[in-house]
Length: 415
Image (cartoon, rainbow, N blue to C red; front, side):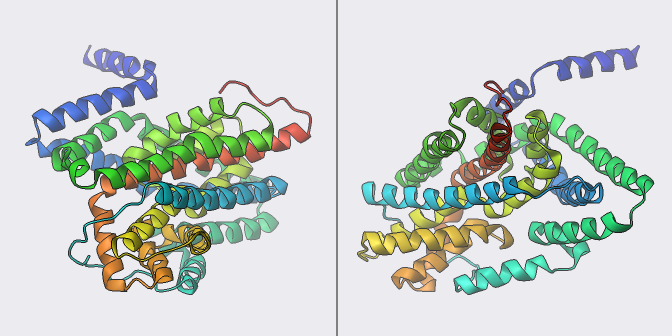
């Protein structure tokens, strides 16, 4: 009797749209955070959800990439080159949008105590060095520490090596392992509403609305630039590439990838979500199993925006003048730096001192700017991650559909 009752509850839960369940989780979490903020144990649901995604994502990526290559179906053809081009051009345009926003709405900040951080890179050379070092790190260590550059490198090497010697039974085993891990991921994602409820509760009960009072205009400029990128620039890139109305695809990516990433605040944790969305869009698994983890590493539109706006805010605060030429150099620096953000603890914020050095701003001052970044991070980092993650799927799908179009296939109008 009890078992049947539990089955009815589970079936009823699964019959409701995941997005609707997430919305309910957001509302409930917000109300609990406002009226029952003392119930700290509710936040553990969010910790467990994000922790589970972060734990399984590195293993899933290694399994999918190596499995695709072992099966001999992976073809990193022109589609892959298109994806990389879209990733890089969008990141550059994001930094350009940030510079324009800073010219139109110049910001200053109240400097705080120096952040207790000493691991920020001191030059673009160090950023590139970090990427190369991460690429050849111990493969077991790369999986354990979620070093996706290392995971991608070793999964490709391992997959290519096994492809030459694997029997048909071995290839099937690789496929079954990847499918099994994917099934675990689907189970975790199905519990997202409870996780997001916990995350929202923690955010609301801890920060309240006070953050908007002290740094409201800075947050508005950051969020405005990211929304402009997500709703105007990225759709324009898709429209120019595919010659179609981009918004059905854009809204699909924002709804199913961006919303989850907004609350998890982790591109790595959202990789399983993006892989599942690519599957729903009927994309080639051999393609997206590589492009999605790669996008979580180098497709950093939100990071480029954060780096540029925070750097120019520091320059304005110190009364340092800058022209369009130096701002364009900042765009290039922010683009390259953003690509290395995921390989550094602290993400995009720790690339701010590097960009500040372009204007002669000392590291002590730059680190205070980083401190401000951590204060507003509950909003800034959420928006940044949502933009980054949704565009990973958006541009992967764009490259795939461009290939379809050249082959005479019909691109879906609804998603």
